[in-house]
Length: 155
Image (cartoon, rainbow, N blue to C red):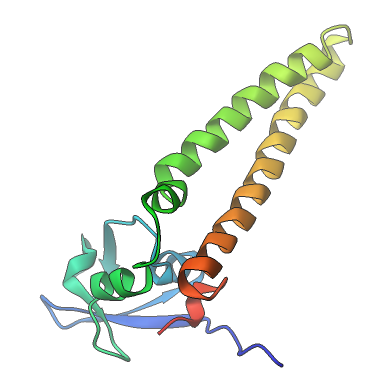
């Protein structure tokens, strides 16, 4: 069984001005993710941000808020919380601080030059490892809730 190709972009329409905006890359991933808590998005015609509730997918005509509600109906409140930006930033912030503190204690008996290099390296490594675990956990949640690990495939 072959996986369908992941689209690189999708367009949405702003209800206020009827302007069409194409989203790509990270913006596309965030907009297509039904568990995303992104409250607003960009209109390339108005050249301003507007609430997501004012936008609909151009190919289906479905409001993005309705799309998110439909695809996230099976999500628990804990899963929604885990996938929120606030939790992500909080957990990665704790990983950064933990890595800095851990690196300091790991290399406390080393020369200052070694500390200068290794303490930030340890913090960076902690953020990368925790970030990778969170990404995989989020993909697992998306699989359970939506049936897809890649939300750009959802319609």
